[in-house]
Length: 310
Image 1 (cartoon, one colour):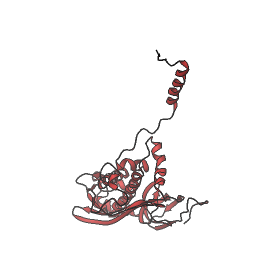
Image 2 (image 1 turned 45 degrees about the vertical axis):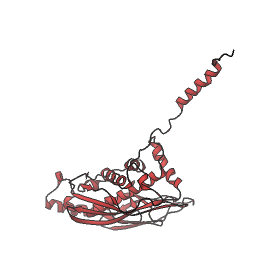
Image 3 (image 1 turned 90 degrees about the vertical axis):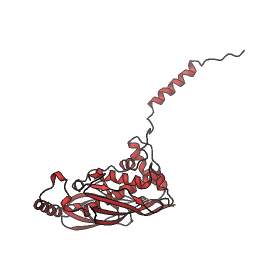
Image 4 (image 1 turned 180 degrees about the vertical axis):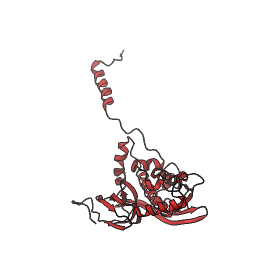
């Protein structure tokens, strides 16, 4: 009759060693960033308050509409936990709040409406990404203050480039790497958020530019307007590669070409990035009441040497 044998000490020791060894290994990413667009935007590009944005009027952001399909090569509605138009609206509201804009659900000083009027996906070697165009309107009561079509185009050479570029940001926070499509559309949200801020700065009435508790008299408001105008300059930023990302002082503000961007006078850090190219970075000085133009000649990441010049 056969008898079961118990493992002896020689078998138990390796097992104990494995248990101890497992306890010393670094923990793998145990969480993900979730399926909401704002959570991915937060990981990809932490946003800091913009002093100019904090002085803007409160804004009500309407639901985003779309009369066109959002499934050209990418099904945008499948990237997050809600339809793409809702995910984008949530992402834009988060971005505006992070920059300092007072976003309210009802009764804002201003109201913004937006509709997706263009969507295109790209899935071929050397060109992987998507383009989203929003038709945006800014209202004060029923009066249209501004209408603008803003495009966000984010391109990589290959899908794996999107994953590789985003992976360090997620690992730094102990998060699992996201799907490439989530990275793609979150970056589109960041780009469009920067363009919304620029539209608000350009179109918001000056008499609403301070919070209600600190609004000045009409005379004081006029003096403040002149002072703010004198303290700012205008930038036009272009690059040898269209739709390159533009960062000012570490904040994504849009893509090239960026025309007539209003910015506080003084020193700033300007950086241009595009997948497959070496970053272009300069310390610039915005001149008060003057227009400046910067052109970035981007070089392929495969080539040795420094970045481009003015």
